[in-house]
Image (cartoon, rainbow over all chains, first blue to last red; front, side):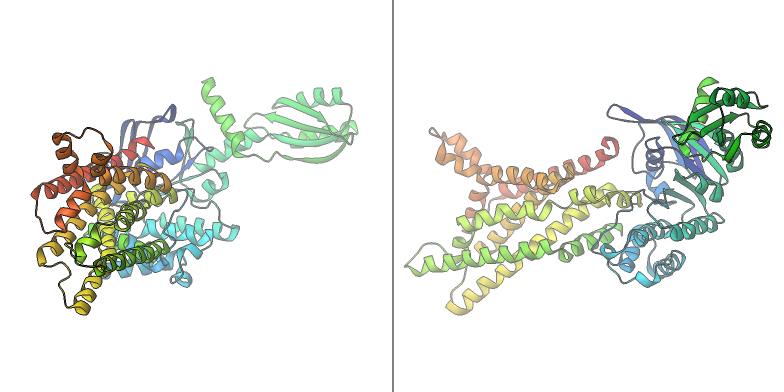
Length: 313
Length: 250
């Protein structure tokens, strides 16, 4: 469905996307994961024909985004990162206008507008001025717009940003349902979102693909990136040595806390989980142990891990 | 088909925004006063000018006239750039040329609507005085055709300015400057010391003042027609290319 070869986009002085290559097959839900400024939005804007690439090629459903852009646009439903709408229009009016622009006219216009209103729960605001809508509703109008012409490919740039937890859950469920009939490329920097909705993950960093994996495999990498966290009261020198000697521990970081306890972080190999050993060690030495668990991982950690290992290779 | 969908939206955007009504109100106020001044001048005694000629050749008309174009056109592209609505617009399967022409068409429509009430002035004049407002059909038609021609060109200039920037004020200043230069070129003759016949000829060719005064006296000259039509097409062509270049500039 999507084929990207050697795609590069340079803004004045900055290379936003650097020799990007990837393909997305029909029916996949692919998550585009990366920190801010990694090139996600730029890539999506090129695929939806809003921007031109500096070099390289990209095609959607067999049509080139540069030379056959209108063919591409009529097959892509794109929801930009900041959904911008005309504030003086009513929701109903806006959707009818957008559908007509996308070539959906006459009776089909009415049908499609009704269908997307239903899908995105917009029934109760159809007569409201867009300027008076909350962020969550505006976001849903943007999503409804992307669905109007029943596109083969949906490109959603951070579709859940700015929504409340309830709405996020609804939108994720909606994306999952849509994935049964559409190919979807969505971007996010929320890890759990990818795990919940996507069949494949592309990690993009500084304009390049850093990894392409299933969410499960990615989750595995994330766990090892996280390490083990423990809070123990003991002699510092002793503690560090003992922890580092545990099987599977690559490195032990010990830090004194204000109340005299020690916060410890253990970096381990992928297959090792030394929590049991830590507990046993503490019991054997008579140390007080008040916390033992996995470190909360954020995306930055994963990126650091993945991009660093890429560089080592 | 897409063109009419876009044009429809452009026209509605004008009439749904308060700016349009404010512009219309003050424009009517100004032209109404201008008309009153013209009639008052004729009342003072016998005159060689008709009320139509008096109407289109006063300072009130000039200033109102050059000011409305920046106000009508400044939002066309700039507003969409600024709000970001340009993104959904241009990711729909529309041609760049359709968007440019629809925006221009919307502005032209609003411009025409702005002038419609002025027809009423002359209708009232004829009814009350039982005199022909323009003396004959020629000057009347001439004045309105010239109004349309000059308007077409100045609106195109405004479109171009708006396509160049996301800031409406900057767009308005750019188009105001260019339009003022074009409109008042004819006054150059009064300021320069040595006006050669060739220079007079040249400024007359550019001078909207001259064009308007000729047309409202019933003279038909094909040169301004060619001048305004060709410039309109040229500036719209530039607008189209500026608009297209956003894909690379961003």
